[in-house]
Image (cartoon, rainbow, N blue to C red; front, side, top):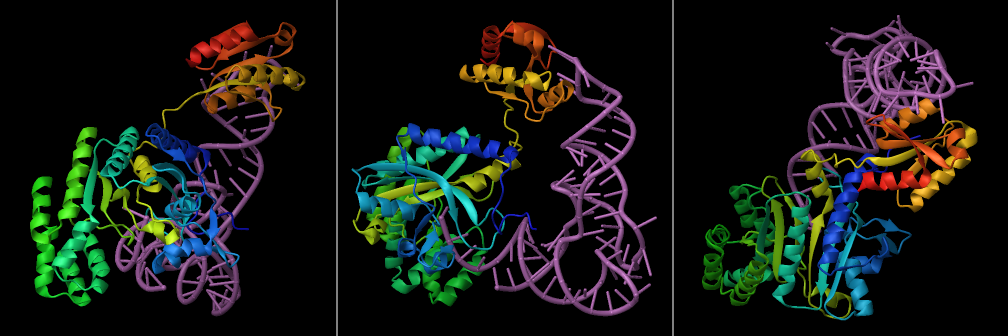
Length: 420
RNA sequence: GCCAAGGUGGUGUAGCCUGGUAGCACGGGGGACUGUGGAUCCCUUAGCCCGAGUUCAAAUCUCGGCCCUGGCCCCA
């Protein structure tokens, strides 16, 4: 018998779930504050839905089920299907924090089952959307305890203008973008040789590198893009987006080498990194053409927080221990015959909003105290003959060792006071 | 798909090179102690990833597989 979960899948024991739930709840409560409503869709989708958007690469990673079904590999495809089918009134702002599945080789930060936390806005072309998504994601990261999220910004339209300016053949564009995306990860030489192999002239390569290597303030970069690539529209969008971000009190950094893998982005793309860490924890962009693949064209933009990366960064930072919330009270029947009374006490406490637990293993009092102590309870309510007769409990504070003989209602009042 | 390093009770590990009784710590269960805990002591539980080969004998050597960790390819 093999007790390990399938390849690339993980169990999350209680001690791990504490941190995960906290992160998920933190994020979802912020999403809600910004007015995003939760949309849940099934884990399983029809294969035709999944493959409509997937590139060849992702298509090979779909977990197939029963011939014509498969597990979702992201949260955007189900969203596109839902929106196309129901056509909700714009702007449709939804969030979704859920697992997705991909059949690929697991490695660092990459699993076959992993969680994404997406927000998307359907039905608006305004750069206000981008700014709102960014501030929302940024707020989440701050709330999770990351002090300095760094937001990188680019626009596919600028890259497209550049490609036009360079007279790049359409068939080359995607492989060129992919090579550019490696800037900072691979050496310049390697990227250059890759581009040569793809069939670019050395003049084109030089111009490309001049472009993506350009440094300066956001304003300078945008002017540069207009002048060198004729990217009027793309630069205009970004400068507007930067204005809106200013209103929220933060400033993204323009980086022309930011591409982002997926082919469906049509406008601004962004990525958030944490300055003290390597790799991005969030990314997204505008995908105005995607929805038309599912029927109705509709402008759309989204951003995704990578839960797995965030969790592993939190764990690495020693935040795996959440501020331990002590469990409140454990009801210890002195003998098994008082279990019924313990139940009554426990339920009274629960109805008063106090988490209460009682013995399921018929343990003697010593064992129960030992258990309650090691399980992190702050107090134990001991119940036996005396207590039952007068509708009371002996409430023992486990850290101080102090005991009080109290009516149930008095005990509730005391526990509520301690909890507050 | 490719490359490298690994896989020993539930967890963390020793043993492997040099084949010969699998050891330690923590955890779990019980007791010392039948209405008062965290300590201590004792008892107990439970393991060599799978398969083949070499050998009188394999956790140990060889090969294959699976899984895991990291890197590449790829990818949010």
